[in-house]
Image (cartoon, rainbow over all chains, first blue to last red):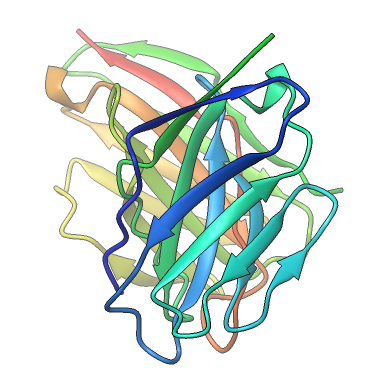
Length: 109
Length: 115
């Protein structure tokens, strides 16, 4: 699976959009981009995934660049409960998730 | 029901003890996973079961012994652990392991302390 690179930490004001970037420049054509998050001391939670097209669900939006070398997870209206470590993972369909260090998102009042 | 349950929530065991961790899901998922997470580190895959058969063992020491008695249950048997095995043990499940893109659902984990 391709390696992903994320900033170690980001801050966001409550109510504003949180835009979390991820680089995956070596991603192959059959690898999906997955986003999970882990709130302190809890199990990881699936957020969203995509292959080529942008995706949106009730939690977030995923924007994948046309060359697929990077993506952005967007939380449209961040709340304090969105404070967590966010993991971007490139996975080829064999479900063996390899977690990187992720981005610690701190949402402040 | 999109829940993966794990018991116990916390476990303290001595190095000579034998204990088991349990994981259960009733979503009809046919792939189940064990991960280990040390403090301030990301989760690391240990084992994958697909249709109740061991599919992947990430070179885990034999003191960890997984078992999948049926499609809803996953156990992790522990024996002669070391203090460095203290960690959060996470179970996850997905609809299947291969063939398409399947998100994994994680349980809350068992926090294990080896004394």
